[in-house]
Image (cartoon, rainbow, N blue to C red):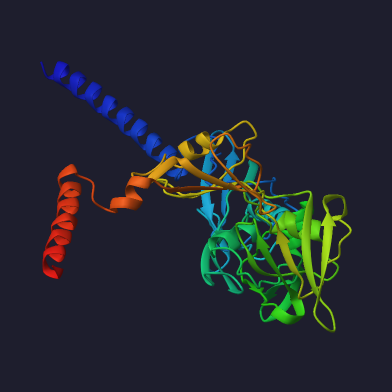
Length: 399
């Protein structure tokens, strides 16, 4: 009996030791897979417009690396660069990598691991890019600090700051670092020609400053059929075509076959008519007033429900335009419609041929002219009786 109990106890003990060993192995595996959901370690919590260039990307605090060491098992880590610029590798040590180019940092980390006597196939890559605060000042709507990452471009920072102010010198944006100008960006070239060099990514510690231009020395005035009329700073030598591409958000119905420019001279102003074929040749000067004319429609006014200007359609009649304007009101009359043409001539009636720029006037009906605001038969009879009684009374008095 004792032998049987001894054997049962031995089996239970052996089974317990095996289960503990398996549990420890699982714990070790989970320890090495810190923060990983997949063995590849490849996730994408950021969005890039172009791949990161390891020869140019500068490593800094907050960047995350994926590290795998292959021996008889795979050991994996996700390691983030500390605020002090160091990368801490569990059971191996720490190494300073901040300020290095990505390819330099990777070579340094691999060399450090091998120097520590680790015999393994070492693979390391950048798995996440850091976020930091960047400051933008000057001619933007909301200057201040914004959280960006190493892949954020100048255009995105400007958008975070609410966009440019009207007098922003977009062709002369300054980027400072440690109080020193490190780059001057001509953002106009990016908007007009798509020059990616003029929409750079921003580095940690850089400050963007958008200068204000002078109204008299640097600006033109854009008006007419544009959504963002007002002053705009121009680049020396900038043409009308370049300005309209980057600033002229044209309204529907704008006339594009010609633009008028009022240019100051010693006495008075010159009116310059620029055809669309010459937009790219017309060099602007500070003080120019640029007028983009609207395409003329048809104006409907008078006793209609929705007076206003409406688009011109060659096939529409007077009656059609009145219908577009909501129809005649209670006071209006279709028999008393007057059309004033662009040359000042007038025609009466619904059969008038409508031209671009015409004004349709719907006059009051005769009934409304006679009795005004009174509309009920009772009110009309009361008015007539009042007049009659007054006449009778006056006649008796003078007799």
